[in-house]
Length: 130
Image 1 (cartoon, rainbow, N blue to C red):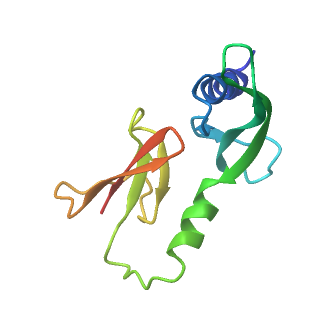
Image 2 (spheres, helix red, strand yellow):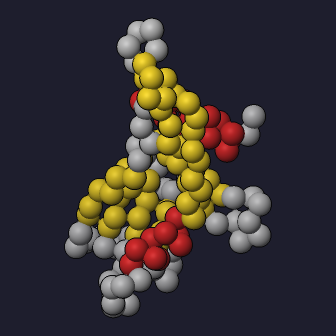
């Protein structure tokens, strides 16, 4: 299987094992002509009845596909952020994977960041630097 399939299955297994929402690593949607970065979030739907061990069983999984740049742009749309503030978000596990940047040079990080913040989304952690 390809890398996207491996990432998808990893998130599915995490959701099933934890009983909570689990997100894939960032991936590029090949169906999208713009090839945008996206993440898949899987949420288990539990049966109300308990199994023989007294645990709830998973009935199904709901999948959400999040176009990350659009998600972040929508979240920031109400704020008037000056062009002088450069914000970059990347995956904590993979700093080379830039998720979002408003920098003219998309991979640019300044030496003295004014803010470093961890953002949690499902089971993933991103780092925001301004």
